[in-house]
Figure 1 (cartoon, rainbow over the protein chains, first blue to last red):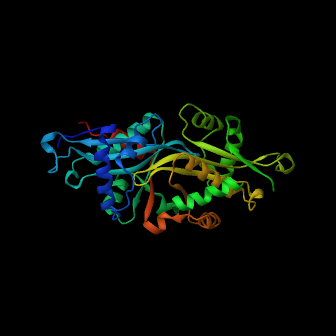
Figure 2: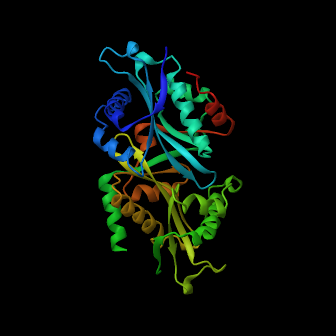
Figure 3: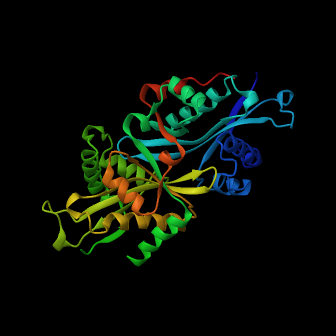
Length: 173
Length: 173
């Protein structure tokens, strides 16, 4: 199937927002997404963007029954490793179910890796749910390592309330 | 013990490089650090920095036996959650062993929270190896939660030959 991968534009944010929601449903957390497409526009398409995004597009003849031609995306940003240097984190990677198995996912992730390489990034990090066997296999087949299993790395998080409380301590300091 | 927390400058890169090496030693992987003082200067203090850093400093009378007054640091960067929006990722948090237990680690973390909130962030994320019990316990005491244990997210990484191969593997379309 014909498709192309390109950099997302501000106008794509509605579709990206739709696909973020679809991915949340797939991850069994349908209410997880709290931000609007306007927030994506502000944070991804201003002078100092918080993220970058690639989208996969099919020609009109392959559009979905709802009329969508944007059928996949990869959202990423630059990070830093104090051991290895410039890195990338791929926050989201998704292809609509009816468009899987056609090389679209591979094209998206390869383009993320290529862009990283152009910026001298030496690592691509991302996370995956332990039960998501198709995704885990996809990544392991491409040579990814599972650092949680191999080295015991766990991700920790402060959510808004806990973050506010922590920040208050800084003011007192 | 009196100490202060401030934003790092270019001149702090020498001490940061020293403390990065000390942290790698503590994490049992001293040979893994490939980043030099010069890399830190270029990557953190140019027009589009890959990271931000804060330093913990003690007055002269409390300097270490080697004469260091810069006794801790935290290195972080802005990130993005496709569900919650702007976030901050704390890559490193380190306090020299003889200065622990004095509130310096907490003060560094609080400062990041404060800076993150000021930039509109809603989450602070970081990773800890689960065998590092003092760090895990410290983190949980500050009010965060373990995303890996609770939700099952695994940290994945592509680097070296696997990343090269991925970057080359973009489909021609």
